[in-house]
Length: 398
Image (cartoon, rainbow, N blue to C red):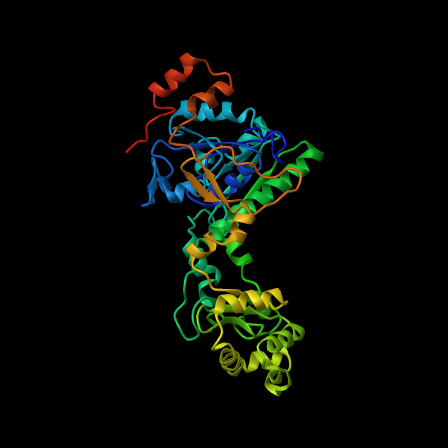
């Protein structure tokens, strides 16, 4: 499929990253036209084994993060592997990696080494805590950062234990921050002609997610607490029971509250001193929940949610994954991608003139080795030697 009109067409990315944050970043770049060369170690990206379920040689976890990339393996532990990486970087625009800080430097492949040879290269590192400071260089993991950054402290039922958010939100946001940093650096390079180092740390990303809890603390509010599904600053803003499906109300102002009460035939609540404004509603959240659930007790949740949002009340049903995947708006927004046997989540980034293009499913291990090496002018004889010496293994090391 031609990507000539994709927004990142012509961009060459060397992807040395594994697991989640880095691969999520490079999948976004690939979806928008970048030629992403995913380079795995001889043992492969460990997420290939994070199943079941599996499709081919890799788990669903791997398939969810590596669409659109060409794949090869490279043994950077060998001098020949490091030399070949330098050849691949000759015509690259971006390097993405998530090695522990100091690893590439030990091999003479750190940013300070590479910028002398490749002054236009944008070098993006995804790390746990950055390279320096009290925790610099330590490994980072999504759940650990959720615990440290405060996410778990505000997630969970009131009076209950801290809970991890049920998806790798820190890794995903770090990957998105890496995309933002790379695109900012590309824009700046268009003017200066110079590359630069882009750092996306899980620790920083985790802290950046703590809104509105940090601002509440900055401006003298009480210490954040776990409030279940309820919002710390707004009411009504949580899950409410109906006769069937629960729904989530996200009512942010008095006008929306009045409209909600009108739709539920309980307009008297707007005159009740306990509910006259957001501050009063927040102080009387439990009484408000009882009153609203009483008004919704006989209503079908799905039908009521559709009715309310159609009439300007922010609201949605609490759906299971199977329900939202089958939802007609999911299909309309093209949020499910199918390429042969591959099925994945579509890109949420929509561009009018240069939309994303899904060019290929995730690579099997070392699938495109010969194509990638031919691109940089490697002779068939050299390619055969690299494979024979294990510099570019074509079978995953057990």
